[in-house]
Image (tube, rainbow, N blue to C red; front, side, top):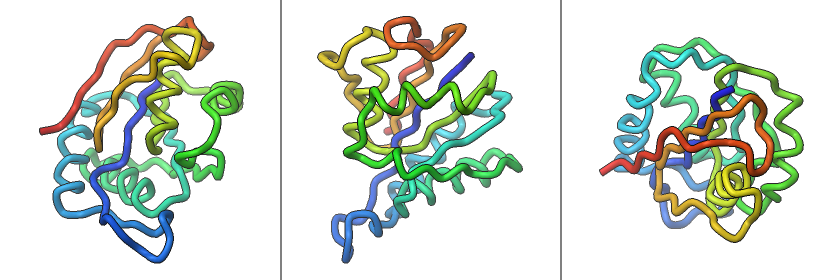
Length: 152
């Protein structure tokens, strides 16, 4: 399985609630750059945070790549959710190529957990950073990093 983790693009600094912050134009450009790294990948499923900036990021990836995939919005993919809980739920979404669009610190910690087997070495992710991981199963400590891309 290949697991792709994409942090949302740059978002507006303020909104009524954090969950309502939308992408900036710079953030949209960052997402397009990272989406290009997924061109030709046979993505089968996209899991996404309910926050506006993550939803916009996932929609932009689909638009940019011409993908006709439904977005599976999950309330346990927000910035403060547990990477261990997310890792434990991944087997509910079987796919050869799975994309998760979410936030930091969740995604950096999740990548670190899946590669290193613990939470002490999170991946440093900027806005719209893309991490590619590969293993037979998405289990803590058993995945290998195959990609780490930070847009300009």
